[in-house]
Amino acid sequence: MNIELRRVTVEDKEILKNLLEKYDYEFSQWDNRDVNKLGLYGYDYLDCYWTEENRWAFFIVVDENLAGFVMVNDYPEVDEKTDYSLAEFFVMYKYRRNGIGKFVAMKVFDMFHGKWQLKRHPKNIASVHFWNKVISEYTGDNYKLVESYPNSEYDDGTLGDIFLFEN
Image (cartoon, rainbow, N blue to C red; front, side):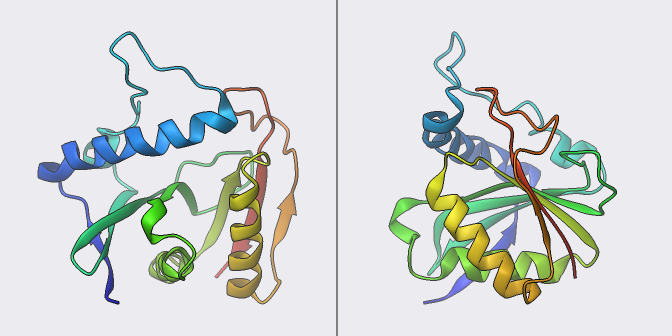
């Protein structure tokens, strides 16, 4: 299996926009977000990935097939001084539970050295288990996890859990 991260170009923006809709549809089971009048979730910050510095979007490509995406920026989710935030992370169902997500997460962390923060929704139990395992392994258990971090609300009002670590 060949796993690659490919930088999303402005010409590929529509593809990322389409994948973000699938991601947001899945995520709506935890944050209870509704679609807009056009039947879409939308992603308010999509254009920022080509108009602002310090925003990076990558497609996850497995054997030349789109398998998801990962988005990184330097915009903090919470009031902690960090260099990078894992903004969005999506692996399509077909590609889950075979090490692709772990490989991609670790590769992205290795690409950007500094202080990281990562927010997860505590109701997304699969994500809770995934990030607990990946971050523990990546950092050798040298991280901080703040559950129900103040002022980290999702659309449903649930406070996010925040991982903080340095690489």
